[in-house]
Length: 112
Image 1 (tube, rainbow, N blue to C red):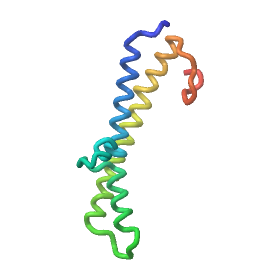
Image 2: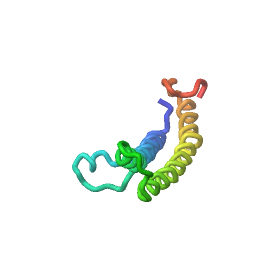
Image 3: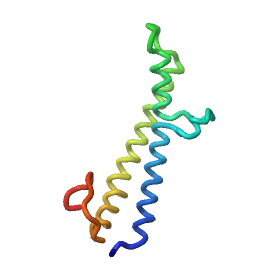
Image 4: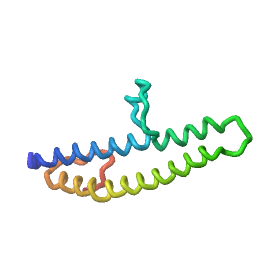
């Protein structure tokens, strides 16, 4: 009851940011289900290398090596963004929700 309505906007914004990170990691599932071309996600790149190399003894191709390199770089950036999102945005939101009297929910820190 004491919650500032702006908290709801902050929760929505956090959800949108998490959705964006998920899309970069796993790809656009809606476009993919419609057989529309999409930007390769991190998991797409890794899966393509695994599938293309599963039943061969040949060395990975230059394209496969490049895909793993790109996926590794993209994943490192994504992990950094997710860490900042959790450490800064989510923690501050949790503290503000607790101050507004929100009940504890599973997954939340105790006392926060």
